[in-house]
Length: 374
Length: 224
Image 1: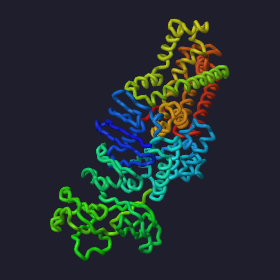
Image 2 (image 1 turned 90 degrees about the vertical axis):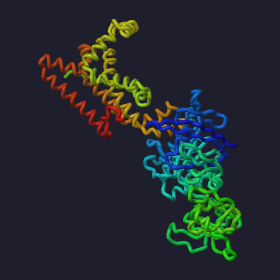
Image 3 (image 1 turned 120 degrees about the vertical axis):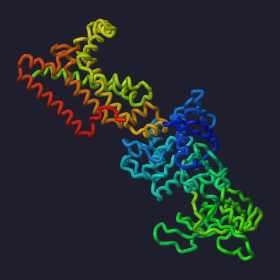
Image 4 (image 1 turned 45 degrees about the vertical axis):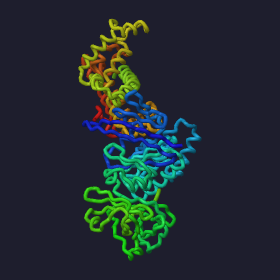
């Protein structure tokens, strides 16, 4: 079952700042929509409005067939009855309760046996069973955030809102928690919206992405599509990465991995029929599904000569389109899959590139960023 | 030593404190969370007893509960006796007189509870009332204790209002501070010494225990 979210609201803040937030999208069950954009773009406002904590100055909010907010009709559904889970960057645990007390807070009206079981299940899913009796104040940041997520999921929300919940965590616990959250959302069948300004997190977590700027959603769509075909320059600039390719880790032992913890390794990726060497510091293993991310300025475009076919990380292709973006041209190359290169107009003219030109795209292994899917 | 007066004072202070918990918590909740633009008027009214001379307050209460007022008439009709110069009348006066000493710490405590905890509770489906009982109240325990101790101690030491509303009836309205005043008037300095010393000791002990149990209790007005 898919969920339809329709939000069109205006918000007024102290000092006369006014922003309009518009989001109209469909979320498949168990899928995650990433709201991606810079700080101050209005991402949190959208989440708080969906949660029912912020009241818009005007507009409407609807979830499936329920109208949650209709300011002109005086309708406002209280957060208590929306069945929305909301997790913020700060865990905001109830400091006078234990971890288990926090998790059971929202299901207090259920029978004790069911409550305990639900709490135990969630604690196991998030690896915090040993913390049950620990006081909220005595938890570390990562532990507290796990408890906060379990607490939010306990009443089985229909919609899960995640407002940069991993931002305050260290890299290791962030990666682990992302995986657990992603797995839980997929299994529970609830839809989720994740707010982030971290594009790697967006790629690791998202099925769909909504790029937001100035309170307005500029583009919504499947992750790789939006990266490949940004609707406009604002979107392209805020995404920052032009090519995002689903890839499979073909070999993870191309070079001896540095024995030191966290050292990067050289891996071989299979993208369609092509193979590319890439550097990964995320510990990708053979058979993993990953995203290969390549910035447009890291793609070198060469005229294809008779001898250039065999060079390492050279992909033979044909130019599909050239779109000028100021002094830079955005060149899309079809190599079996599409790669976007950003080159200066000067070099485009020197190389006499035009749609249909046979070219080779060269990418350094260090310029390919590997993002494992959570 | 006027043990009767001391017993009466403790009874009055305890009853006042209990009533102020019942009345003060809803008022404090409203002050802490209402967004009504004229809220400051209510806050000013609640704070009046701090600055008003006790005689002025006592005079108005006396008039308000006297036989000429609707309240006084209704009470007399129901119970067959008047409110002025009775323990009940004195209790009403004490509650009003100590109102800010309970309401202000209470509302400061409620307002200091992290807004995000309240929002988290709402999003977990917990009603506003239950959120107050399960989140706001438990986290305001220090403020509740402060308000209770202050209203108890303040009632124990009141003088002007008691004199205006209660008069000086032994065992009924003659509180310990009036008893000290009487002793001094009668040049019975020994009795005044003893009772004063006892009151000083009791007041000090209450405050010392409160301070020992918790730090920074004397937050009288919400700091915003």
